[in-house]
Length: 70
Image 1 (cartoon, rainbow, N blue to C red):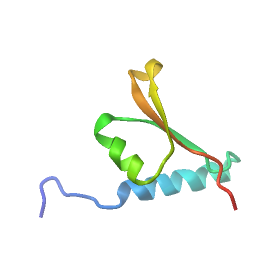
Image 2: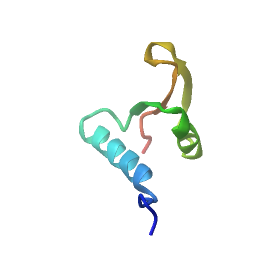
Image 3: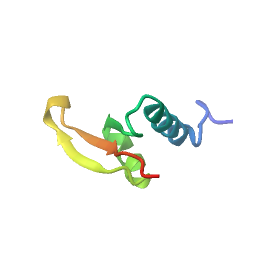
Image 4: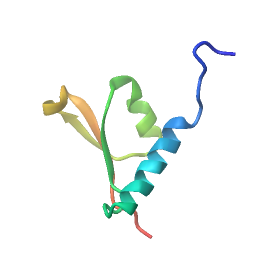
């Protein structure tokens, strides 16, 4: 057992939940976030669109899923 334990798939599950919640709230599935540097590759692997560094948010990279197309 790893110390601390490694939870595989939790990040993807949370993003899927956030998109579904966004749909339920009438935002069309849009989800945006500012990523910590050590998490940027995670969002890139998920092919989450990247919109560059946000100087108003300590230069963190902004990622955003747009409206879900059905």
